[in-house]
Length: 263
Ligand SMILES: NC(=O)C1=CN([C@@H]2O[C@H](COP(=O)(O)OP(=O)(O)OC[C@H]3O[C@@H](n4cnc5c(N)ncnc54)[C@H](O)[C@@H]3O)[C@@H](O)[C@H]2O)C=CC1
Ligand SMILES: O=C(O)[C@@H]1CCC=N1
Image: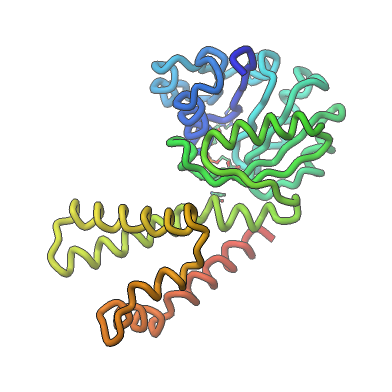
């Protein structure tokens, strides 16, 4: 893909994370990665790594084979109108905007264009995203090309558009929930004697190990939990107290509250 150009419109939290992941991945030549934002100073770090930064969205789209839209939902229609004159049928559009359906985006476009919705999370900056993808008007080859990009930036799964809000909650918002778990566990660790630094290291590496046990061995969480819960031991005592305090149900209810916010 060294000759392919990619433009990210909206270099905020997610857009910049995507650019960082792309720069680290080597999928595209650095000078073929364009990123726009109104305040260019905030993109200096990406420019220092060789990405092309700017605030001209039309130029960025004209000079792109793949366009990633990463602005806030309320800005999306305005941006689509702005870039419409620069769009051609051979460009691929990928929206990472939450809560705006693929049909709604298509209706705002001047012609039929291969259109994707992708829902990554901010770990895309270190090539560890979970990205869910759906598409409209795309050929098999275009689908493979887009899946291949996100596959190199973490894990990717193709989903029906109707599941995109669920993907937003579980994957994109989910990283915040996982981080809050780590933060809370670290605070517990400090209470029982560790420094903040050591506590965070233990909590973070433990979560990574737990996730890898499931991802690499395809195990069910309870199977792995059973290996840790010694009869009359401290693990089951902790787990049962957590459940008594609503641990699992607070997560399920939080996920539902997040999902309802998108409806
Ligand atoms: N932050 C996250 O973890 C995730 C965000 N999303 C979606 O990604 C989109 C972006 O979210 P964030 O990065 O968090 O928001 P953000 O506010 O950090 O980024 C949006 C960026 O767009 C820029 N922008 C505004 N108008 C512009 C224009 N006319 N031309 C160029 N740039 C312009 C803003 O200056 C800002 O830097 C949202 O639609 C959000 O729903 C999706 C998944 C995860
Ligand atoms: O909280 C939000 O609205 C956005 C969407 C997914 C992650 N952040």
